[in-house]
Image 1 (cartoon, rainbow, N blue to C red):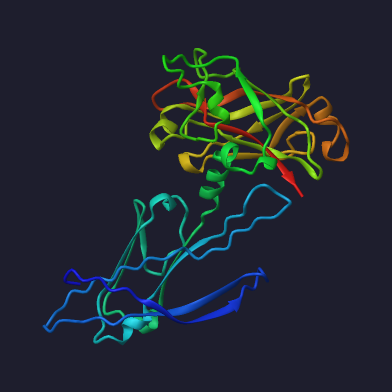
Image 2 (image 1 turned 90 degrees about the vertical axis):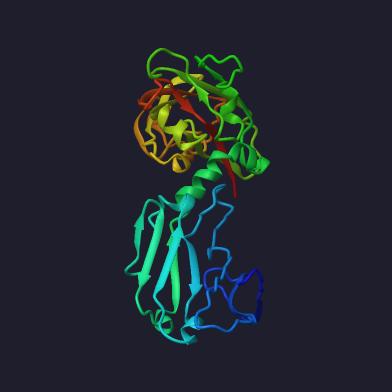
Amino acid sequence: MEGKEYRCKAVDPVKRKNEYFVDSEVGDAWCVVEIEVPRGPSVRLKLTYRTEFEHVDTETNKSSRTYFSTRNLKYLLSPAGYWHGKPDFHARIELGPYAASFPTIPKGAKVSDGVITWHVQEADLKVMRTLKVGFDSDPLFHHRQLATFNVAADGYQKYLGEAKASSTLAHKANRYAVANLLDGDPATAWCEGKRGRGEGEAITIRFETKEQEYCSPEGIAIVPGYAKSAETYLQNGRVSKLRIEACDDPSSYAVISSYPSNTYNRSAFFIETDRNFMPIGGVEEKGGKWAINNGASRKEPIPSCLRFTILETAPGERFSDTCISELALVRKCS
């Protein structure tokens, strides 16, 4: 206000045990500040409120992946209800990366083009009490975790490997090299170089199979498009169906549909597998030993090589080539 900045201090925080996690606490507190208000018939007052989203994310030793809970944005309105009069209340919340998260919004609010607007005439703020917006954050953060898994995960959670491709889109700086699949950076990608949309092109990954005690394969993470930006993601082809097979036994295979999202930062796809890297979730077809047995119950060596063949694609809006940003082999240690 008039170039002055006031900061508040938390007073009398109230801590209580978290009902879901016994080793953690949550709490509430008032933030109190004294403000010098100039005299006059009308004073324009701007309050800036910064806070972290309320959330409880979960990690267990049964999975390398995190469960990301709903993010809740809360703003307490009731203190201002003790000011003079009943104001016309206007709230505008820009959703940013949460725009595709189907937020839970206050009654009477509207969502359009990634912005929540909420208008109440002659608002009784003591009755309205709290502005609360909830964001389904799991698809966004799940994508980010899987897309960066090859660089961000702990060493025991990932398999180290080397990738080769049946073809690569030509570029003088080798921008679309197959090594991009394993670099943990969704802004880089491998793009196939075959004429057409890439059906039949394949990636082969050879990797270390030495297991630590209590560790076994958990699944395969794929970002089935060029996830550098929304523009590159939609302009290039995206994988919609894959064949996964053991390199030394091509008869053992599974066909998976990846259903690529139209939102580039929510597109990471996880294929759950058994202890022999046999896909056990979302399988449309399977053959060989992978069709006969449930690998989770047999003790066979983990294959040291997997091959991924593109069967179908979602066409790009501008380019015919198909790209994959990331491919990670995920291990759990319980």
